[in-house]
Length: 250
Ligand SMILES: Nc1ncnc2c1ncn2[C@@H]1O[C@H](COP(=O)(O)OP(=O)(O)OP(=O)(O)O)[C@@H](O)[C@H]1O
Image (cartoon, rainbow, N blue to C red; front, side, top):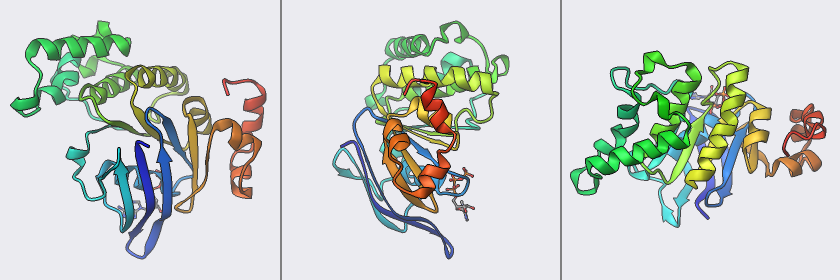
């Protein structure tokens, strides 16, 4: 079991936003946290990232308790909606940044960094953009670079918070396949926060439906549609039945 989340609870003041959340994901699995606004998706992802700490419960990764471990030491890659690239650096330098910043003892040499960056750009199908600066990229290309940059440090897990929500529908759809392909090629687990049902259903192996700080159901797209566990899930996914019937890959 790669990531194991046990009884995670979080309050902001007296407002409880996560209520004993439990979830376990397998190595290399792609999961989505899907739910309406305010259901606690981002709070849970930030706790997994180590950017915030829970008030109760435990997190472990590959058997190691990481509940109190600093974000930088978790070695998780992150991509957010507003992920800022370094505007004064080329795409190649942006992607190489995390490797160049490593302590000397475990920093690859220049040739190795350059090889790794080229290989990643190739996998993300943005090799031709290597010498460009962020201002010379479209929104979709910027997010591909952000994704590639997050993967360059060889993270143990990839965390994505609405990475495509600022992009228009057509670009978003194109990026879903790219994200999924890249994640499978690299072979690491990923957690995607989204409120876009179609996005979750197209990308994820399993989806955790969240409402009111709780996971209502955690299952494969097919099972969620076939046997919704609660009236909330059934109502929330209303409309996805036709998506299923259209044979949209699930
Ligand atoms: N720093 C904070 N201080 C106080 N309350 C917060 C804070 N961050 C989030 N909240 C509240 O916690 C609840 C859950 O927020 P969270 O961002 O986790 O939900 P979400 O499901 O990701 O929502 P969205 O889809 O709108 O981003 C909301 O009611 C929100 O207003």
